[in-house]
Image 1 (cartoon, helix red, strand yellow):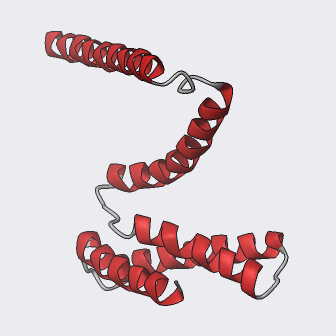
Image 2: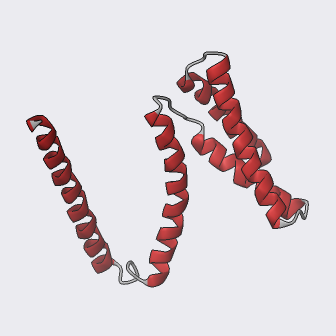
Length: 142
C-alpha cells in the first residue's frame, strides 16, 4: 500500500514538472515572438492537436492491448491523399471523398488486424510491412 502511495506521489510530481515546463516554454516563446499566444496561433495549435489526439487514442488502445502499429503514419498519409485526389482530380463531392478516405483508413487498419490475428504474425512485423506498402502507394500517387 505504501508503494502505491509513493507511485501516485511520484506521478503527481512528474505531471507538475511537465506543467511547469510547458508554462515556462509558453512564456519563453511568447517573449521571443509576440504572435505566439495570439488567438489565431492558438486556434491552429488546437486544430493540429485534435488530429494527433484522435490518432493517439487509437494507438493507445492498441498499446493497452499489448500490440503496436507502425503503419499509423502511412495510413494517415494515404487516406487524406486519396481524399484530395478524388476531390481535386475527379471532382468528387467533398463529403463523398472524405467518406471514401475514412473507409480506406478503416480497410487498411482491418488488413493489419486480419494479418496479425489470422496469420499469427506479430503486429510489429505486420505493420512494418504494411507501413512500407502504404508509404510506397503515397509516393506513387504524388
